[in-house]
Length: 471
Image (cartoon, rainbow, N blue to C red; front, side, top):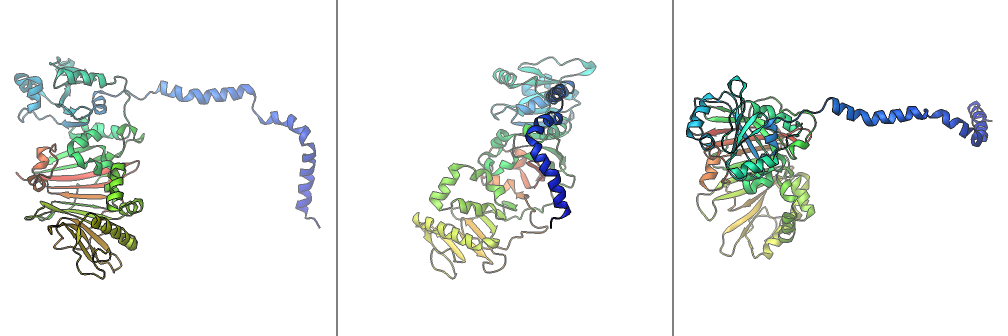
């Protein structure tokens, strides 16, 4: 017996189906708006954005922001007429003019380098002087918005003028955050070219921080900073301004005297992303050391601690130690080490493995050291707690470590997800000739440097740190 609902449905649907070929043409026009209304709606959707941009356009970039767009590195300095006249001012304005202008200054000034970080520094000062008049242009000078810029030579002046875009619109995201930092107080802005010029071959390890800015604060013998960095071009950042969270400067303890550098992170991806993105790096790793795509994936996801330790004697100035938390990937790491051992043997290196359940050349050995024919140890690896619940692996270049300990992977003593902790003794590195040459003298003389990086949204990283200089 049919249910009432079935009868009702048949009584409504069946007549409609029988009338469909004749009723459809008559009912379709009633479901659409009249043609003039449709046209008006489409025109409104097309014209409204253009009308908004015409009525409320994004303001044009001012002088400083135009300079940011063509600079590889830009530094801001507060007015300090009581201090000695900087050499850059004397070079750009002449001795007498520099002394007079320096004593009259009451506002921020800047120095910057061109887009490829080559050549001498440019000097930029505020254009307006007392009474609203403008400064006369010195030799190799030009006006950029509300600034007077003095180039190191005529060619640099012409190149800068060709790069400037008077119709440039005001920036967003990281640009709009960096601009206030550089307009007042002491700060620094950099892009990928500037970072590469400062750190040289270490630049691929810092790909996540290729553009950014910092506010600098000097107190006694300590310089502290806070700011933002991005893994992309600053002008392509999010529409909204970004702002670093409030909090104290880096609270990391000083680095021990027997270490030159310590870098900790929640995954090796943070450190190797820039390097492993290059085919020129991946191909030799696979061909020479047997580390294929699967092995690289294993490397990338492992929490790590990287240490550089000075060596008082022997063929090496320092040894490099990379400790990784193996976790559930114990067997995968064993297979990676087995392939690495075969590759090292094929390169005529001799295995001097220590005690362990397996013999020579086995990745199962607790300790493996690899020597040249003359007996010099070039590196190796050691398992730490291999049979325990939290195994770790210590890989080293140079002599075998005399001591080791389990590294923390959680809590206050370890970085959180996406974080990096860096501690360095720059003066010690400089004495061994291990610092990049272009780094400023202030950094080279520092006894301690600590920096923390934490992930933000939209590819932004929050940076904070401090630098201690011995008088």
